[in-house]
Length: 223
Ligand code: C5P
Image (cartoon, rainbow, N blue to C red; front, side, top):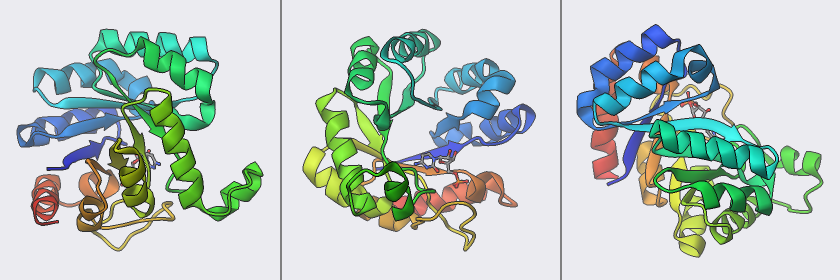
C-alpha cells in the first residue's frame, strides 16, 4: 500500500501537535526548510521516538561535495528520506548516492508548481514536462538514487520505464489548487503507481486533521 506523507509546512508548535495527534497512524512526516530552520531537530526526534518516518525536504542543489556532506549529516540524524534536485547534474547525484546508506535519496524532477513555460525558461529542448521529467528520472536511476518526486501526470510512465520509488505531491481532496499547477486525487495517484502521497494544506489546514488522514488512507486503500 502507498504511504501517506504529511507535509508539516507549519510552525514548530503546530508541527509538534500534529505529530502527537497523528503519529499512531503510521505516517511519514515531511519537514521542509522553514520548520527545519525553526527547530527541525526537535521535531525529527519526536517523529523518530514515535516510530514514524522522517522526510527531510531540503531539495538540495549545490556542488557535489556540499551535497555529499549534507547526506552524511542526514545519515547521522537518522533521516529516512532526503530530497535533492536532479537538475543538480550527474556528478552531484552520484556523489550524494555514494554517501547514502540508510537514507533514501529522492530526486526532484519538475516541481508540480511548474508547467511547460518552465521548459522554455530553461531552454531545455524538451517540449513537454512529461518528457523532461522522464529524462530526469532516468538520470536519477542511473546515478543510484532510490526514487523521484514527480507529479501524478508523469508517474505511470516513469514507473514503467524506471521502476523507481515514486513520491507524488500536488494531491487534493478539496477543490483548492493554491500555487500547484498540476493536482490529482489520492486514487489517481495510487493508480498511476505512486508509492508515497504527499499532502500538506488539505491535512493540516482541515478542521479535523485526523479525520482527513483517515479518509485519505481509506481512499489510498480503495484506489
Ligand atoms: O500543501 P500542499 O499539499 O500543496 O503541499 C505539498 C508539499 O509537497 C509541499 O511541502 C511542497 O514543498 C512539496 N512538494 C511539491 N512539489 C514537488 C515537491 C515537493 O509540492 N515537486
